[in-house]
Image (cartoon, rainbow, N blue to C red):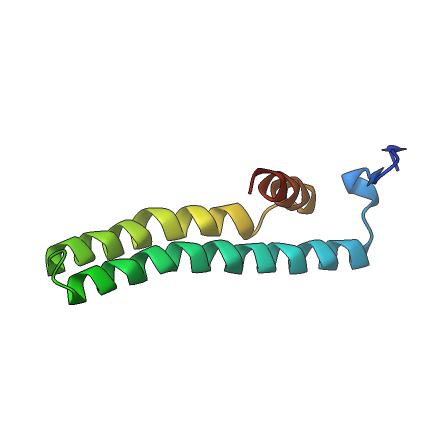
Length: 98
């Protein structure tokens, strides 16, 4: 342990237990699904606009392409295969900013 404060304990990443690592992975999975759902909702909105003749099929195709090649890849890199301490920091930052 590195230090403590009134609200939480700061833990050295090298001292994280298997149970804590598993918990961080579970939290990361929840956050990943939440972010993925939010981004997929934008794609769904494009389909809704297309069905209402507000945009063209080409616009929907562009949105799908953008999602697949940019957004989904960035989300994947943010949550999969990264160090547990980075996941913890990312989750803390995301919770504070949203």
